[in-house]
Structures are given as structure tokens and as C-alpha cells.
Amino acid sequence: MKLAVSSLWLALLLFPPFLFPQTLVSRPYVIRAETTTVDTYTGMTHTCILVQADGHYRRERTFQGMSGGTPYVDIYVDALPEDSFKRLQAILDNESFQKINTPLSRGGIIQNMDTFVATIPREHGLQNMNFMTVSERKPYEKDLKPLMAWMKEVEKRKVSALKEKTSDNCAAPMVQFRTGLPPLELEEKPKQP
Image (tube, rainbow, N blue to C red; front, side, top):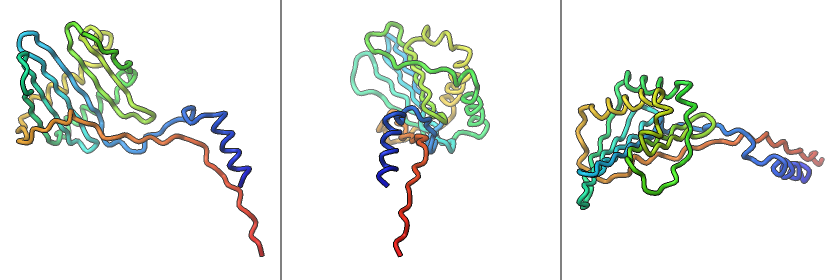
């Protein structure tokens, strides 16, 4: 037993867990995406969407006027039509789309702010996209255009806003990954007669 535990510690020291591949345990959502645009005359519009694995979604639209005050929030909850959900899956499964992975933004004052942020659970990790301006998206425009068009289609759907106005910014549930550690084989003690 001591040998097996010692072997495990030695394996962890020589090969830390981050060197082993991760595997997605469950996919509670398909995508979480958000956009924020600022108009210097009217205010800021923030839209987010969380699409669950079963096709249900939550979409929020928040508008904050330039004069301040309480933001105006609309929340929509519905299920996507099957063709819309399949189209989203095809967009997310596109090979060149899957290669887009950008670092988190560094903050600061952003001129011409027109953000697009998305998180997609993948088999071995999260795919993250963070664009603060249209010009940052330019190199990926061909691959992002179908997703942006799909999001506009969802916005145009005739869905009644919820009366409840508590925004959660389309909070995504926790995604769990399993690390591919090699199985631990413990030596069995011989049975005493």
C-alpha cells in the first residue's frame, strides 16, 4: 500500500495533473455570448444569450441611457425551434470557428466599443472569444458572421418579455472536466487464514 501511494506522489510530482488531458463531464450549455454597444448620444445596450444543451435559452437586453438612472432590462426565456438549434450547432462545429480562441481583454478605456464575448464548452476545455471592437473581430469576420447573424435572428423572434426583471447576465452553469490521470492500482494484501 505504501508503495502504491508513494508511486502516486512520484507520478504527480513528475507529471502534474495539468499535463493530463481534460475531458468534459457534462455539457450544461452550448454557448454563452454577449454583445455591448455604446452610442455616445443615446447610451449603452448590452445583450446576452445562454443556450442550454436541450435548446432552451435565456436572452437579456439591458439599456442604460447616457443620463444614468436605472437600466432598462428585458428578459426572454424560450426554446429554440429545431432548425435554429441545428444551425447553431453547425456554426459551432465548423472547424475554422473552433480554432478561434482569444485572450481576455486587458480593460481600460475603449474607443468605439462594440464588444462580442463568447464561451463554448468543448471536449477538452472552454473556447473563449473576447473582442472589444469591430476592428479586433476583422481577422475572424468570415467565421463569426454566421453566429452574429444567428444571434440577430434570435433577437427578432416574437417572444414575450418576462415580468420578472432580475438580470443574471445570462450566467452560465459551471462546466466540469475530468483530468485523465492514469488509474491507481492498489496492491491487495494477502488474506490471513
